[in-house]
Image 1 (tube, rainbow, N blue to C red):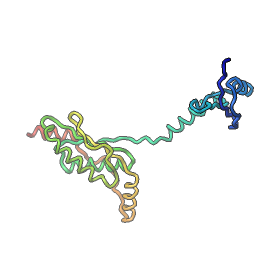
Image 2 (cartoon, helix red, strand yellow):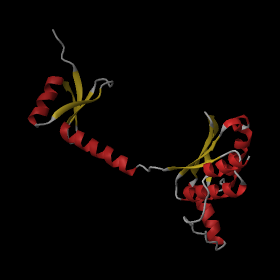
Image 3 (cartoon, helix red, strand yellow):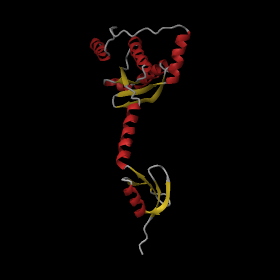
Image 4 (cartoon, helix red, strand yellow):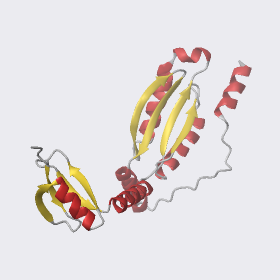
Length: 200
């Protein structure tokens, strides 16, 4: 005699209809114009629900879309330096990084090497450490400095708690941050280095 497997059935109202054969459960679902869906196959006995499967899929897709919309997308900005970058120029770059971090953007700091510069990675590492120290009041290091090809880079992320404290300290001392002047001259790093190389 073939034994028909038994399952525990939950109806569309959430009521436990008890343990019954699959055939009985399917008949109940058909009588209600609904579907029988297995939800806990590893339970003993397995658990099935009587639901409108099409509606279930629609609602799940809708929830997934809403979850995607609510996800915060953090933009990643980049500042590029060279091992010979002077303090004045680096100050411009660090100021840009601070502004972006305060706007809740991540900042990747990269140092590009040319020619024999690659033999002095410690210079670039020192620059990255100094920048990290300057921005430590509002950011944390997400990816420590690392070499990849002829580039050493570090990723910094805004720290909400540190930023809140930073802004509170500014407010407490009535300090207003200077607005960023986009028209202010900022020499392109590669052009600046080209000029230096041509003078050598």
